Image (cartoon, rainbow, N blue to C red):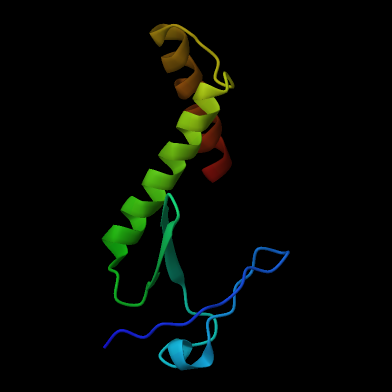
Amino acid sequence: MIQVAITKLSSKGQIVIPSHLRKDFKIGEELLIIKKNNQVILKSMKNIDKKFKEELGFALRTEKAFEKYERGEFKQKSANDFLKEIEEWLDKLIIVTK
């Protein structure tokens, strides 16, 4: 059954889900929001498996990294310099975890 309601966006970017539409949600429940153009989809995370959550997190981190790249916030370096930096980082990580 499709239920419909109208709500408003507050000055803080908040919306109220009318009570008759939120009766199946619990306080503190995670909700997935997907926006494309002027359409927004809201879905409960309770039936979404852990692998999807991990993949979604990876996709979001990748998108943020790509945005930083487009703004020119990444440094360019040779493959050898990059590998050397990773080795130094791993050496520090190993020291900290001992």
